[in-house]
Length: 282
Image (tube, rainbow, N blue to C red; front, side, top):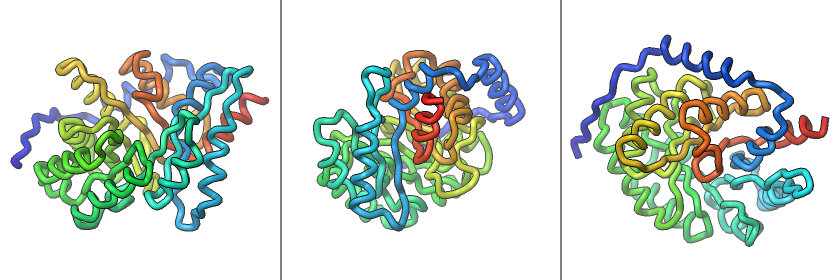
């Protein structure tokens, strides 16, 4: 497929200025307890390590469920995110909890494997209980400007997901500029992504406010044209409340209150939950 893009040139200086304005406008404070509780409900609680075990993953599931406290208005997390071989463990632990089973797939984190392998991995993960798939785009193909191939691969993965939601990881830290971030976002959305996601968390830089703002611009433009809401997920390096609040502020200011729920906004994190809970107890 010859995928055509009409990407405007994105000027980094202008995007940085907008980020600063948004963050100042929201007057980020550490005493915003209600917002922090809302953020807990947006978290994809994640473990993606080579030393993950069944018990470690099961314990993470119990933690995600156990954080809920109705008297304090603290919700459970949105999802537990793991490697695909743990999908069955997670779906069993989370049964009837209301928490989603998310897995990374398509040769995460590099995406450097055969398309047939990627699609098989996705199908096996869904068969094992995953109801959310976090795929990585083929950055090599994208950087070669083989946009049609990137589009077709995402489309094929979306089909392989069946009823499972698809989050498409752009790995913005491996893209060369914000114009490419815009293009990759648009390709992912046009190919059927339910969410677009910043990063794998395996490289630096990971989630950055400037790339994230550009991604929200693409989502906003898509909504204006089609009336369809696409979700967004920053991930990678979001390990403290101040950073999480910055991403929350960008979504609230640029996309609006309608996006401030876990159907349209997630935050991928492994240690953020503990930081928020400690702050709420302080």
